[in-house]
Length: 252
Image (cartoon, helix red, strand yellow):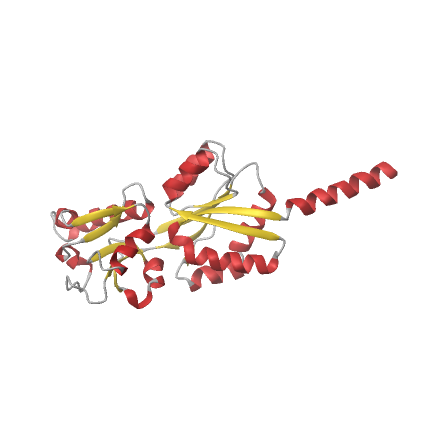
């Protein structure tokens, strides 16, 4: 009887400990604003958990996790990075929780006089995200898709005016905000976050791509807290926060 009581007491202590502490989340740069909002909502329900957010390019964050960075959750802008980590046994099964799409942004004065996506080659200073970054990969696919409809040289006319390729999409956006680029391809949610600092031009659905955002628990550390956060993220409350920041629901 006494032994049973001691075991029960110890189990409760372990359970409470597993649900309290610091939760470190690695997330794609395009999730910066929304994950800050989601973490605030999560902490209002779980004040015992301290959430630490680290943002960057998905490929860079994946590499850090592969080399042992102390992350408990990883949210990527491209499923491929989590698929690699899952195959290596580093993360649990990923869950797709949101979607996004790409747009063209220009400075408010629009020096290239862009009126639609087909005018993109008119910009003399175009900035894209790097080819290993999800936003860069999506941009490349969009240009290839458009090449068939807008002329076989469309992609070449765009690329000859690319002046830089950034390490993540927020840096790409910032080039336009600071007037260092005439146009860029970024996620619609990032463009919305810039407010009146940019003009936004949609990309026709025939050329555009749907970005999928998966999240997965990193094995071996704070898995209980990580699952608590994931559960909140895909709850109705979490989804409303995502939608308020322009993301679409893609919960699986």
